[in-house]
Length: 556
Image (cartoon, rainbow, N blue to C red):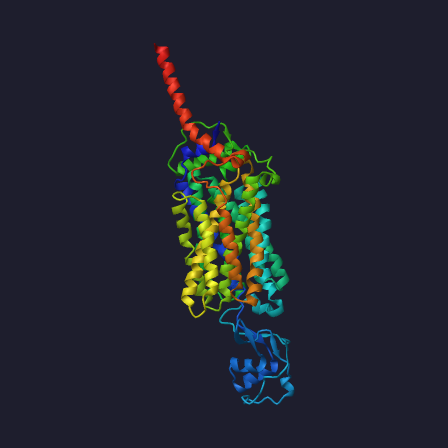
């Protein structure tokens, strides 16, 4: 009985039709960057200090500079070994009852008592208006900024499960289109939400839809190309997320209000509804739903666009994958090797999300030019995809995967030790770390699929990848809260976990040139599987020899 892969061989495994669909679906990854990393600009926290209305009024009357009025309002504090003006405390003095003249040089503020900010904050906006400045999410409320990023990852986590089910139940194309309606509506509502609580709720819904749509597009794309093209297409599809990382700072530079930037990020999702006329439903999914006639109709259209023709009449088609209905969560941990693979892959998904997201969000708190810094760090992601494609078939999976994690970890630790005075050297080392963790993030996706047997493969990838979203929930708290203690402390944590992840990868088996496992026995006894693969050509050769001898004997 023929499979869809047999049918695809006749229709073309990566012809003009698949290239067209690939090109338009890659666009879906562009706005995903703004959704995932927009917090760098939308949640930008400018330099700020306590506001004293009496000092502000006197500043306007006397023509003081911001620095001068700041000296009268807030004390100097020790921050990371340097004296800086406090952001969260002010002098406890009522300037309305004090004879405050335009000449204040003689004022001795050394022994004045201090208190927490009471009258709000002044901001050095630097041309940006963020939700931080709109809702005063600083000092004791600064942790609410972390929630903005955590809620999008919470939405990703729920969306991964929900749309995984929707896509299997109702189809990849339908799920993709529904998600884009949800994305556009939620994105626009988020842009006009009146208070921060509603922003967090809608942000979760936004993440739910965006992750679901991105996953549906990814699955559809990999299901309509030949097996030999799946890995390359998947890596390049993810690479367009990096293209979005280059577009995002340019958009943010010209769209300085966070609400209008949200509108710009959300607008493409209404455009994606036009894909109804340009992308087909997945023939593989249709076959799994016993709708062979529709699957053949779509495949014939693909063949026609590829200038190919189906060589024979395919009346019956069967699914390529084994039945996963019997798969259980216990299968992932019941046996030693399966348990080892599951825990190592979970930790690597978690590490990739924490370090990748942490390094990007760190751009917004280092005090440099966030547009240029974000752009430079985005550029270094591009070599990642090409390095993966260059090494995985020559060297293998395990060594590049482990090396990428270790390089990322070493770069984080070294960056933390480089003084700020060596700015460009520090930037270069940090970019190398970004390159390493990008490679690791892209590699964990397909390495995960190669380490589980057929009947539990989808379940294994789904369970392990949930740790990616858990890492995304944790990352902003690790970065922003630890940076308050010491700006470089998050880098130390990122470096340690990346080193551990790299070491654990070396405990995984090499999968280069090894057939995909079909049963748990193939995982637990890999040498038996390798021996069977090695013996197969010899048995085939021996069988042909015996048949030839038999024919010669019969002829005699």
